[in-house]
Image 1 (cartoon, rainbow, N blue to C red):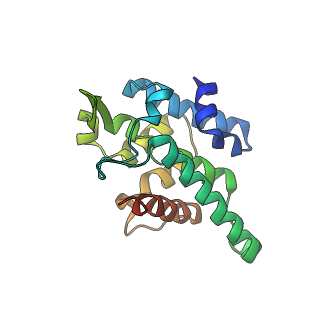
Image 2 (cartoon, rainbow, N blue to C red):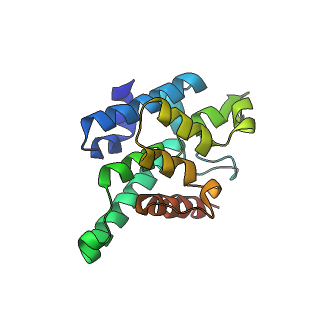
Image 3 (cartoon, helix red, strand yellow):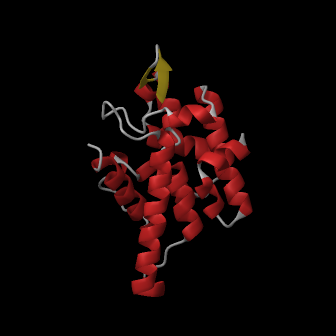
Length: 176
């Protein structure tokens, strides 16, 4: 399944640390297994249930967020250099995993995507951070996942967390 995930989300290869890349892939694999998803399902799964019909799928949203984050980081680095210290692998991993909890939050019933029982109990930032913790992801990445949405409002975010938060809302607001 790893090869299929890398094929549809080639941004996994932007993570330079091979061990971190493998952990991120393992999180996605477990989320898909627990949610009953196959890689091809991710291209049909809407990235949000808040927009109906949703014009972008889970793969597109994930890739869009990763590429926005990398672009913002490169622009900031070009202008500010090491005064804006951001860790590329942490940022990319956080962007790849920020919505992985949606694999547990959403299910397909009668051809329609709806909130699952798990999704009614736990929002995706919580379930995603739990999944990532089970695979030994660093706290900086758990922070990005757990705080990327409204759950993080009022809390301090790391630099990487700020970039992902704004990239995610940019990607959402485009379609709202």
